[in-house]
Length: 239
Image 1 (tube, rainbow, N blue to C red):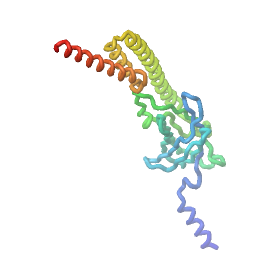
Image 2 (cartoon, rainbow, N blue to C red; image 1 turned 45 degrees about the vertical axis):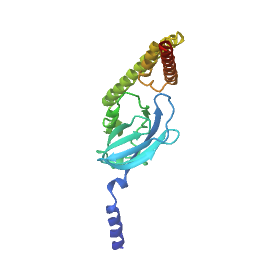
Image 3 (cartoon, rainbow, N blue to C red; image 1 turned 90 degrees about the horizontal axis):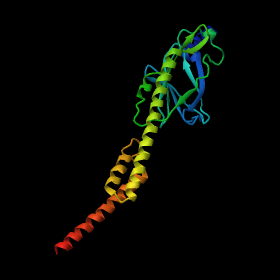
């Protein structure tokens, strides 16, 4: 009997401590622009640079993560076409007896993601967490650093607002150049029309627009035909 008890104790001693008790948190992922839930987002947990857990959000944006106690962790939310966000978790200082069945000491963690913006670098979000979590004895649970979260939220919103304003300005500039170019084209002022169409394509995010590209090709053919006719006329006059 003693041998059996000793064997069981040896088995449990070989199990890592975090396997005996873990924390669980969940939440939903939402697109900032469309306000729709996002599925297929990878939620990855790192400890000391090593991946220890990964899951994928469901089609309704829901996800669930298990993490060990007494660890400093980085949680990363990634999906192609979206800006990656991270958050940090310090799961130390928790009395295991205070952990409820199921390991839920966190409130729901809902994360908003937004798509990549051209000409804007959000790379700092790979290293700077949008929220930092640690155990708060006064709340008997995990809680976030409200000051840092507010500061990061303001920084992101400020950049997004700047991008939106620049986008509106670029759209207005593009539309004006196209309107002017179309008038010049109809007046057969092809050289100046070409200048305006080219200027419209140089506006950020407009290089692939069909209308100005087609008009540039059309003007190029017109000018080549015109130059050829002038050359033939000169040759005829010389003859």
